[in-house]
Image (tube, rainbow, N blue to C red; front, side, top):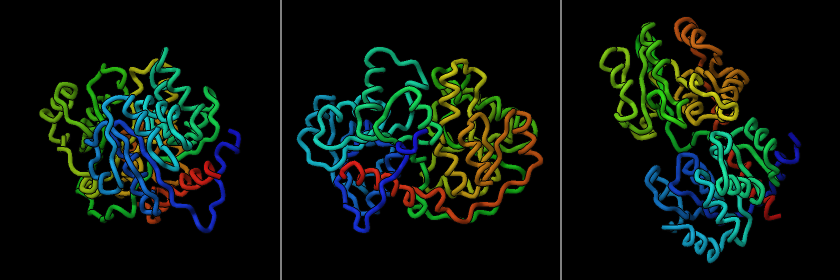
Length: 363
């Protein structure tokens, strides 16, 4: 990968404080973390959104909220406002494309999910994605492996990688005593088999095999829906080792996870036939990986090369290559010691890369 795309502008002694417009249909965890970290550095964030339902706590860290009902209204907000930077978050991609067409300042495209890699885009959707990657002033992606994949398909002007790290200064880290026995936790989305295009979220085969080997499995799903999670409900009813927890606030989740030994960061590739989708799953860096590390839980990574390389490089967990190896690690390996220096996974620390990017764009 050409180093010029990932090079960062040297930070001046007196960094300019920016007025930034975040555009997002409904701000997610990544947008929330970036907003908190940027405002801690003295910058000002405004929002242009359809709604704020996923992470309403972001409202405590922004100056104002502009709501739009359609893309015409969004275009007017962008055109008539005065910001130093417009920072567009996907998915969807269209709001960022609207900003590129209407903004009077640099537009940054923050690609959380590479839609065209995860699924086949045609017509307008493909043109919109190309616009975001190639006509924005800079692109932010979640891993260096993802940056390499983007370069194979598009020609961004400037690109940096920012994994979805933790707000280590925002959350209190507790040292929980581990539960007796052998306990694994999974937090995030989970679905029954056969639900496309997210069939890689079918964790039931993994969990069933774990409880059959005497391992306690604790699940905190990001959204509970019995219609698409019936296999997990049946597993809960048939096994005392499968624990289906209710949704809890993020800070409480990080605290509760500290009592478990293992954290699962994995995808199910059994139903994935498309090479691009496999490449997508192997090049992303899941939020949950850093949440586990923050909580003092030992990550076990399966079917995610980028996350696996990360835990191996930092001796922070285990990277397994098969279900049998997964079970073997859970039964016989010693969990890695919790990471003491959290600067490695600190969004507050790494947000400086984005701050430097803004400064470089404005010269």
